[in-house]
Structure formats: C-alpha cells, structure tokens
Length: 191
Image 1: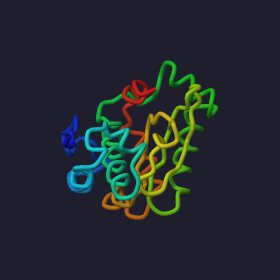
Image 2 (image 1 turned 135 degrees about the vertical axis):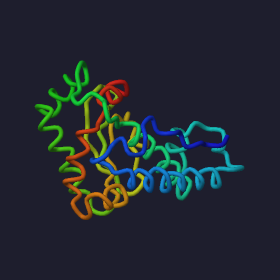
Image 3 (image 1 turned 30 degrees about the vertical axis):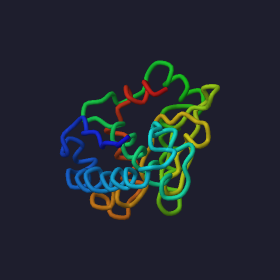
C-alpha cells in the first residue's frame, strides 16, 4: 500500500490570519509531504505494509512509528480546521466538555496551558477514553493517543514549525488563535 497525502479541504490562504498561507505551504506542503514520503520508503516490504495507518502507529517502533504518526497527526490537525466551521461545540460533545472540564472556557484554558507547558516539540490532544471521559494529554515528538487506547478528537501542533513564521516564539498566542478556526462539527463527528 502507498500512503497518499490528501488535498486540504480549503485553499492554502483560507486560514489566514490565524495560520498564514506561507505556514500552510511549508507545514502541510513540505513537512507533511516529507513524513508521507519517509513513511512510504520505510514501510515498503515490511509486515506493516498493508495495514491501515492507525494500526501502523499502534504497532510500529522507531523511525517507522515516528513518520507514520507524524503523517497521521498532521492530517488530523489540518483537517480539524475550517475558515467557516462551527465555532463552538454542541450536542453530546459540549455536554462532555462541560462535565469533564467545567465549561468550554475552562477546557480551552487547560488545553492551551497543556500545549504551552509541553517542553520542546510535540502535540496537545483532546481524546476520549472507552467510557466517554474526555482527557487532555501532552505528547512529545510524534506521540499519538492511539498508542494509549484513546480516541483522538482534536490536536494542536506545538512544534515550532507549526507557528514560528506567524508567531515567532509566542506559542501561547498561536494556540489561542487556533480556536478561531477549529471546526467543531469535525471534532463532534470524531466524538
């Protein structure tokens, strides 16, 4: 199986000013493409070659895991956004956020704090466990909650390449701005 990088469901400039066209071009166009290309090179002629990407992430180690997870993480990240998406969760997801974090505002604050507090590069995740409880987790480098038996719902990329062109060293500002483009319809569908 050859993994392919999907086209974004919006133009490269559609998320500006939150994420500039230049950042989308470098981040999704170049960084993500490199992960996909490396994944396809590393997986060839291995026992993982015909597995769905989620299973590769759950089972692989080393460079194959890193590239598989980074390929998946970036697609998951970029497909969580929309220039016209819903700006607040509703339905069962909203009830779960209120139940597990106290309010949407408290959840957003805790999520950004987790991203800012992650030393170095990685990801901050909102995931659901098997009982429906929502959790915020941090993960260094290519970490993915699939390896912990969780269902990922939303992620913010806290690698510097995700925000440095637009925000320089202001990670907190970059993460807070992302709330303006989260498509909660997508996140609700994942829930």
